[in-house]
Image (cartoon, rainbow, N blue to C red):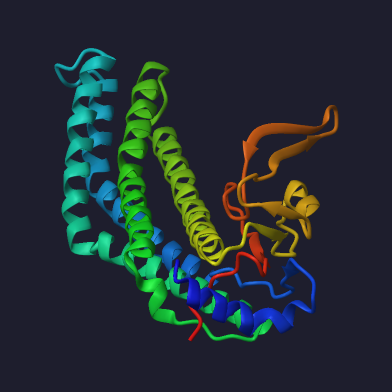
Length: 305
């Protein structure tokens, strides 16, 4: 915002809340968008079910080729020939999955999740401003092109990442079958290994849901706070047993939006090991931490009703 008269009106409205001090550290903790994470996880689980169903339709053909080759009942005479057979069948899986995705409506589903997460972030931002500064914000301001562009980028990136899951999974399964043939694994062992790889992929998809919702919440929060003239924030954790020691150590500390803290992990041998990565709340992998705004009367600028 850049309307000087409006900014001065905002300053007059919120000045009593500062009690002569600046900056003003809010004590209101914005809620993490749990509902959006649950919905995103539901979408990734549905997508993984599509993958599992499609694989189940083609695995008998792949296993039969494996069986025949092991017993020397076909003209295939080495692992390379079998690999070509498997590759062709897995390509059919990928093509059928692409068709099923169109019916699944992945793009629209991910877009709805983004809107749900943004709505939660906006509701919490308005609550923080109301309880901290005593003013109501115009919700329509946060529907502008600037915010919508951030959502579109997030949607496009997440659709791309979800669609990349099959190629990684199928490539891994293909290599499992090839190595199994070379080392004489039984069909039962191959099937167990494929199931194990599917389970790992499903877990990664679930982690993707948490990581990306946290990332989107972090992006929107940063945009909201910087747009409001906040140059600093206080770190707040989710307060449960899953908070990593590094983030717990940052709890309550004030940081600049221009200078995120460096991440670290701890080992018994070396103590703290700094990773070189610098992150704001929600930017580290699967981080559910949030940023509590620090308001400055000199720079504050909000879309007050």
